[in-house]
Length: 131
Image (tube, rainbow, N blue to C red):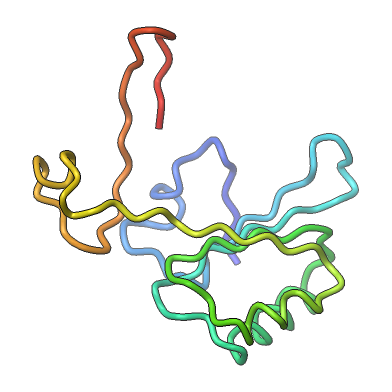
């Protein structure tokens, strides 16, 4: 597994078309450096029970983590969720948000369905860059 620092762009480490199996980030908790957090970014395929068991076996055999965050591109079926619920490590799920094709940004830039984009803009009120 290729590790990269969070300050470095993921494109620098993984390229333009990364393999979803390599999209794992393992970091130490800043308040307790003895504890690890693992972030797994899943591909566009649905996570079923067999894939959930494979992820858990792969994680539990290689790394001693205390917290797992799984970023999904599509919803997970309830059998797979039960496998993660029975895990001894705390698991949190995050679903990537979808933008509607009727959204003004999507229409203006000609974005297509399931296309992943990042918007960065400057806020006039705070003067900070938002993502």
